[in-house]
Image (cartoon, rainbow, N blue to C red; front, side):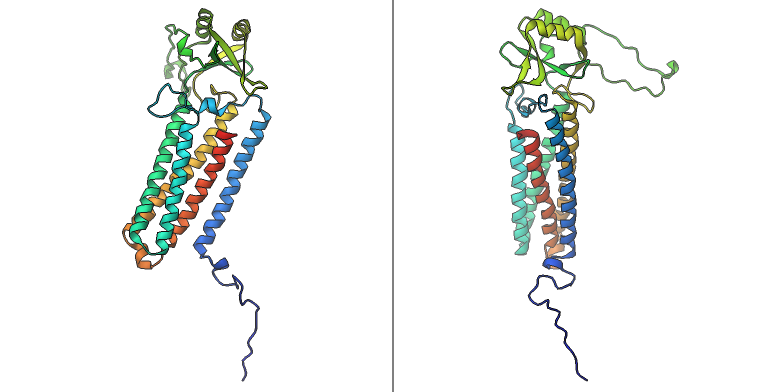
Length: 326
C-alpha cells in the first residue's frame, strides 16, 4: 500500500495554519488585538477633541497659560516645563522596559529585575505627577467671571499679566442657611460657595484702575482680546453671572467648558491605563523575583507586558501633542 504525500505549498511561509500565526504565540497575538482595539478607542477620543477644538478655535484656552505650574515653585510661570518632565519620565520608562525585555531574552534574571523596577518607578512618578496636575487644574489659580452667555472673563493688568481675583476683590461676610431634612430638603446637595460674589468682584474692579478684563476670544495675533476700562466695567455689570474658580465638568476658569471635559476624560482614561500598567508590572516584577520565568526558561510574559507599556507611552505622545503643543 503506497502513501501519497500532498504538497500544501506552505514551505517557506511564515504561517502554514499552525497555532503560531506570524510565528507569535497566542498571548502575543491577543495583546496585539487588544492594542489595536484600544488604539482605535483613543483615536476616536482624540478625533472628537480635534473637531471640538476646531469648532471653537477662536476661543479655545491657550495651553501655555493653563499648564504653567511646577511643584515647590509657587508663583513661577513656567509653561509646559512639568508636562515635559512627565513626558520624559514616561519615555525613559519605555527604554527601561526595552532593556528588561532584552535581558529576558538572555535569561538574565538580575537585569530583568533591575530594569523592571526602574520601569515601575517611572510609571509611579508619572501617575503621581498627573494626579498633582489634576489637583492644580481643578483648584485653579486666578479665578474668572462667567457671563450670562457662558463666556469666561479673565483679569489682567495694563501690561497684560494675569491678575487673580484675590488681588483686587474684597470678600464681604456672608451667610448661607444649611439644608435640613426638617425643611423638606431631603436630597438636595449644596455646592461650595465661591470665595467672592460677582458684586464683590465688580466693586474691587472699580477700586483698581490698573485692572482690565480679558475675554476668551483670540485675536489675529494669537492672544486673547483685552478690553478697555469702560468696556470691561460695562461687560461685568451687564453680563456678569457667576464667579468661577478652578475647573469642573460644568465650567472652568480657563475658557470653553469642553476643554476641561476633554482634559479630564482623555488624560484620565490614559492615566488609568498607566496605573493599570504599573499594577501589572508590579505583579510581573514579583514573579521575576520568585523565579517563575527563570524556571520556565522563558520571559515572554515580560515581553507581552512590554508591548502594552510601549503602547501606553505612544498614546501619551499623541495626547501630549493634542493638548499641550498644538
